[in-house]
Length: 195
Image (cartoon, rainbow, N blue to C red; front, side, top):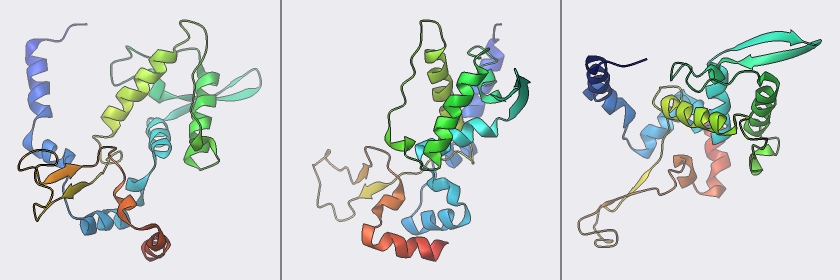
C-alpha cells in the first residue's frame, strides 16, 4: 500500500495545526492542574493504569475455546498502522499479559516488578512491545491519555548559568507527576479535600 504525496502533506499539515499543537502542550499553574485533577481524577494514573486503560478502551471480544472463555483485545489488531503489526493466535497469552497489567493497575503488587516477555524466536515479543509503544504515543495525544509534568521556574534568576546562560525554566528530567510536588505529610489532607 503506497501513500501519495498529497495524503502525506495533508497529514503533516493536520499534525502541525496550531490548535491541536496548543492542546498537546498545555501549560498552567499548579492550581490549574489541581482543578484538572478535581474535574478528572484519571489524569493522575500511573503507567500501568494508563496502559491498561489504553488497551481496554480499544474494545474486546469474548469467545469460548475448549470450554474456556477467552477475551480478545482489539488493541492488538494494530488499527493505528492498518494491521501492519497485528498479533494473531496469541489471545490467551495476551489475555494473561493484560491481566498482569490490570493487577498492577489495581496495586496488587505486580507494579513493583519488571515484566519480562520471554519465548521462542518469532513469538511476537518485539511486536507486542512495538504495539504498546506506538499505542502510548497515540494515546498520550488524546484527551483520555493526556500526560502532565512540571517545570521548575527560576523567576529570580538565582540559578543563572546552571543549565545555560539565561535558562530560567528547568523541565522535570523524569516527566514526573505534578502531585509529587506536594510534601508527603500534606498528601492525605489534599486527597481528602479532592475526594
